[in-house]
Structures are given as structure tokens and as C-alpha cells.
Image (cartoon, rainbow, N blue to C red):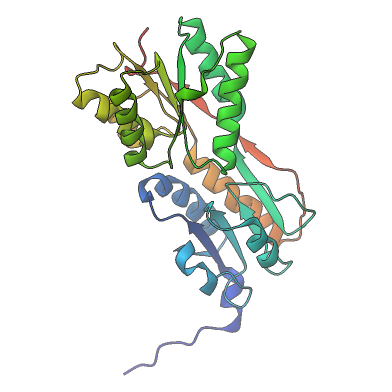
Amino acid sequence: MTPRPKKSKSDKDKRIVFIFSDFDREFYLKIIEGVSTCLNENGYDLIICTNKSSDNFLKSSFARGTISLDGSLSDDYFKTVAKPEFPVVLMDRVLENDNKNTKSVLVDNYPVMRQMVQSLVDRGFQRFGYLGGNSTSLDNKERFAGFADTLQENGIAFDQSYYYHGNYREKSGYQAAKLMILSNDYPEVLVCANDNMAIGAMKAFEEHQISVPENISITGFDDSDAAALAGLTTIKIPRYESGFLAAKELLELIKGNVDRETVKIGASIIWRQSVRS
């Protein structure tokens, strides 16, 4: 039997780790494709893992750097992990420190949410609801800020009883809508922090013969494949491009080209049938 060739000590210098949350794998596929394309073009291998196994891989003895899209790992954890020999690119947060070994690549949530909410106001909506994701996530904070600031500028008071808490999963959107149905009190339009929750809410309303968009309009955020099938108005994130750009920024850090400025990626509104004209 021919012995397998041994890995050289330098193999780690061409290995990158991508960490993601494991609850919504479909969302990450295009991002991972973008990361993989950029790394392959530059001769790097990609290792994909979830936070449950990340401790085994986030070390300079195993790989040359990491890209993270997982809000469950703490800022302090990444401050400890990031080193000159193991730089980190974060796609879900900005670290508030002067660590030159980290870089953030983020969706520019605030302006596109303002644009969408303003368009809803211009269509005549006055009674708004908001279904938020994890309250500590930067995405949710920015999306809600864009939502709330636009209403305030238009002189529309936001009733806090119409703020519903979710966790980005479809089930939490379904449960939030059930609460609205049980109380027989729901807004004219429900703005959701992601597509999964919006689709869950749509299913609950439809089960109770509450028509979308005739009785309630609903919007999402992400533009998943399921959003298109559901006819959901949403905000499209260029996921492939964001993954490619995150990998490109990591390679620049590996080369020693330090630029701490956060990279923000634009998004666009996709109008579909879930919002009445």
C-alpha cells in the first residue's frame, strides 16, 4: 500500500476557517460560495465549522486566519483569538478596540431600512409593527434604528406594544403572529428583521384566514429563496459578493496591509406581493 503523503508544516499557512451559526444553513450557502471562490483563486483551502467546534480550529497552529458570521461568540473571545499570525474578519459586528488584527465587513442596514420604511409611509401606512431578531445583534439594532428614525421623522408615533421579539427563526415569527391574532390587534404593516420570521408570521396569518396583504402587509430582510416563493417584499443582501469581499479583506490582513475602517455593503429593496399598493 502506498503511504499517504504527510502534510507539511506550512499547510496551515494556506488554510482559512469560516465559522457560522448552524440554525439556518441555507442563508450561508451563497456567502460560503463567495468566500470559497476568493480563497481558491488565491491558493487557500477553506475549512467550515460551527461555533460548537470552533475552539479546535481558531488557532494559528491550525490555520492562517478566520472569517466569522456567528453572533453567539463573544467580542472578548475574538479579541483574544486575533493575532498578527491569525487575523480575524467579522461579518456580524464591529469590535470596539484598536486591535489591528481584526476587520469588519457588514451589511449597511440603516439606510436601506430607512428607504423601505419611507416608501411604506409614502404608500399611506400609519400603524407599524416591528418583529425584531436577537436584541443584542448589530443587524437588529441598525435595522430597528432605521425603522424608528424614519417613523419619527414622519411624525408617526410607534406604539411599543407593536414591537415583537423573535430570534431570526421562522418559529418565532409564527409565534409572534399568533400573539397578535389572539389579542385581535395587529398593525397595518409588520416590518420583520429577517425573512425567516416574516415567513413564519405569514403562515400564522394565513392559517387564520387573515389575508396578506389585504389585511396586513409584511416585509422581510435577506431575500432568501423562500422569500421569493412566498412573494415576500424584502431587502436583498448581495451574499456572494459579501463573502468574496470578506475573504479578500482577510487576505489583505494576512499580507500585513492593515486598514481598520469597516467595510459596508449596500443592499436593495425587492417589492413583491406581501405589501399592498
